[in-house]
Image 1 (tube, rainbow, N blue to C red):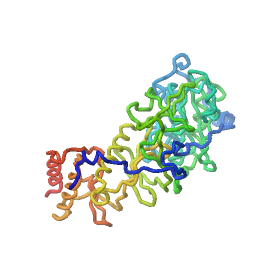
Image 2: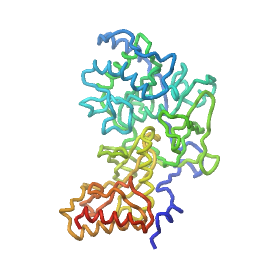
Image 3: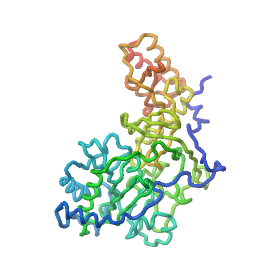
Image 4: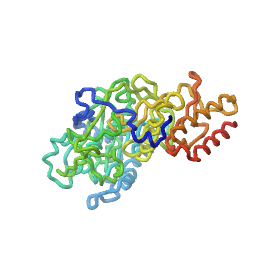
Length: 468
């Protein structure tokens, strides 16, 4: 007898749970994955190169802070974004021959605050990531001095605020997209970053630059790194054609065997979401994050060969890329785990529906091979079976038998108490190779009782769509 969705929920397990490949203990609390980046170093010679570049390009000199920021630190990220764009990015953009600072382009993995692009926003060259002093205030320390936990233990300044995952975020924005330069700023403090192909997991960071600085000015630094980025050749995405760890969405964050959580990071963290940004340091105050089932943080992971390749499309849930997961051709449904909280909830809901419809996978719906985080938790992603050479159905070209087959497939889904809730021609794919039809996009689906009238209404809607 077919179980209802309610019955399945009583004993449902995650689709994918990985055990650390190097651990003999499946409940080990050792970190489940290496940090991005593996090392942080000073970008030596940056300021000298900026000064030389300013002389060569005859940049406009002088100060440009329109608003004071020393007396009242900016605590709202949108304010910091506006001021950086108005006072630095836009004046530099005018001087660039072909670069523009704009919204994240379609083929960009993740969602940066600004992205320097060329070719009419078609080619991403450099991300610009904004924070506030609420979670980024190094109080005169340098990133390479405080990146490791032990280096922060002696910091007593109560105003010192740092999230290790902030560096992981901006690094992932560059590494995921094969880029080599980036900017990290809260407007009051701005840092310039570089990643090299010869040492792809090392991040080079400049000393802090402030709006009132001279020789060089903030604007001159932005101009210099923008020129480097525009003239740079985009490299391979880090992890391409290689094995790196992926981890399911129940993994807790960790930092050198410690795990922290700050429920007040309203800047880029949803306090109601259990997959928070974590890793917050405010002086020596620490909050240890615990698992729901006990006092220890339980992690799980595994090495898998994965690639993320070409952009396929996007929607309210995030972006879709072709790629590979553990020798399977897949469609990666992705969203930025830092900024796209609603999209991530939608993907998690869709993964949950796939777990309920486990018996339908590969027959009525695509197979779900993986759900969880990739690229050091920068992206939340689903790895779904790639429907080869697929196209949306055209009811006018379907036979009566084919239409009846599609209706029966929907009935199979309904037998598990799942209402698709978004029936359309775009959400039914045909695969010529297998001659199979697949229902896709369950982000809006609902779990209902098997006797719910909604199921009957949806079946009738499908029949009208199919002209049956």
